[in-house]
Amino acid sequence: MFSQHAIHRAHQRSIPVMIIDLLINYGAAQHDHLGAKIYYFDKKAWKAVDNNAGHQVTAFLRKLYNDTCAIISNDGTIITVERRYKHINHH
Image 1 (spheres, rainbow, N blue to C red):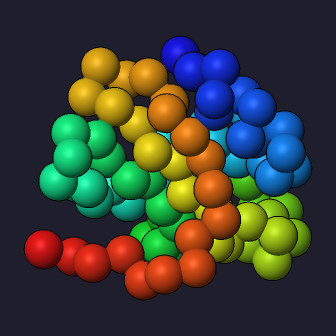
Image 2: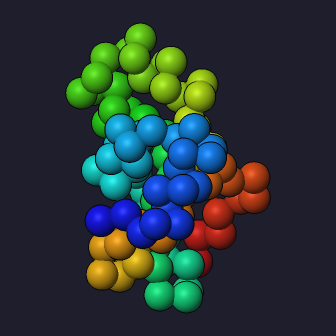
């Protein structure tokens, strides 16, 4: 389920729902220590996408969306989506 904020930000940032679905299904997750999880693409995630979508599709998507992440609350609501510019800390 998307919050209104997430819908608005995804549209503003040109992040399609398909990419958010890929993040949720294949992306790595890291707690943000504020009650939510950050889903992002790492090498393992892109390998899983590659196995399911094919190399050409994955290479294209990776160029456009490698820095994309989704913030999802504990109840499963997508709070926001963004392009990350800072490294995600792995604690």
